[in-house]
Amino acid sequence: MPMNVQEIAAMLPPNSVLAACSTDELADLLASCSMHSMKVGETILRQGDDGDAAVVILGGIARVSMIAPNGQEIVLDYAERGAVLGEIALLDGLPRTASATARYAGRYLRIGRAAFERLVENHPKVALRMLRDMARRLRDTDMTIETDRAFATGPRLARFLKRLTDKNTDGHRLEGDLSQGELGNFVGMSRENINRQLAAWAEAGVIELANGRVRIVDDAYLAQLAEAGD
Image 1 (tube, rainbow, N blue to C red):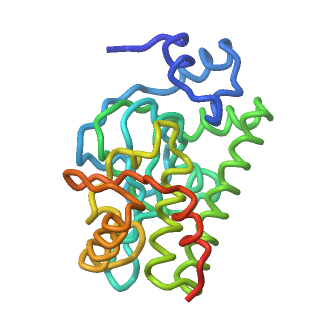
Image 2: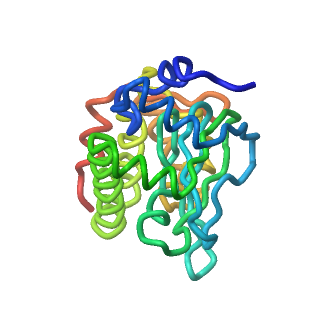
């Protein structure tokens, strides 16, 4: 079912790139893009494809990942409501660097190249927010590299748990209730190591485990673990 400008504006969180748009600007953008529903497991962007469009998540969660040269899947992020995906390929004209797959059903806007370029050129505030969001993701990537090289498995897992829950506004429940296997893909640890570490933390009262979900109980202690070295 089509959505009007007011409905879309109400769905965008304050930190969304498009939250800088006025109602008229959103109306102009909406006139030149298309609305799509996404089903669980559906790939909305595919690594290696031509970057002919960007998408804006309006509901649900998309799992952003890439396949490394050795065939291993690396989970980069979990995009929630308001996130813009696919803009890098539009900006540099090269193939997509990652795939986005719906982990939870929702909706998204698809913005073609011409409309995207017009949006960036005509609305400096949107362009600035987009740069800030790209800078945030670059920082996250740098942190991932730092964590992989400098931290043992316990502190590494703690840092990634903090990264996920610090972004979340709904208590301390992981975004989208990530499974332990999914968390392993994100952290770069085997499921066995993930399960062993989480079980130890649950026994110590740092977290709670229920039906594969993780809830942080002791924020202060987890923060100490996240900063611990080898």
